[in-house]
Length: 268
Image (cartoon, rainbow, N blue to C red; front, top):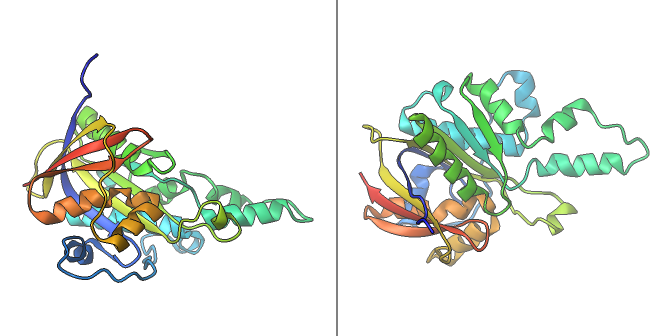
């Protein structure tokens, strides 16, 4: 039996939005333990790059995807128009899903075209293309609670096979009641990474990723660990924590049970 394949890339840019972690600059000190974590609702910037009509229609899941992706691209000093994009989410637009269910259960079950359009899993990818003018290929995928790791693997393969920097955007947003009882994601959050197949002047760290079955890394701060477990996109928080230490190390990221990803991190 052949050994698992290891995929390597360099992280050139990072974007983050989460409850109590409004951006990567703030999160660095919190994840490194130099500042306390104070939970607060996620702040989702208005998608200013969208035309007015699309801006009005942009849901919370679209807003968190665009904001984290743009933050990572800006951090890397990259051109969003040229980056292939991998978008990974465990769910789609929860608020729209509830509204569609209510419509279908009503006396008038006719669904508006706008609601149907915004119910699709690849809707954020469409808005990303509109906002940035990106013409590079994009992929939208879902692997339930393992969506961050699935997206990371896909982005690494894309970068290695094409020789181009690739953008990963992993994101989720909450479901309102009554579906919240079945899928209790408490808020919107996202992690975005610009991954390059070779080191660049913007590179922050090298990562090498190997599939395995070791237990996922648990964050030492109970509040941050609760956040990691509550929002699937934040299963990547141990990787971000490793980036704040300034030292080489390994973390295990949750994937599709019983699988996990071993991620070796080396700062540049």
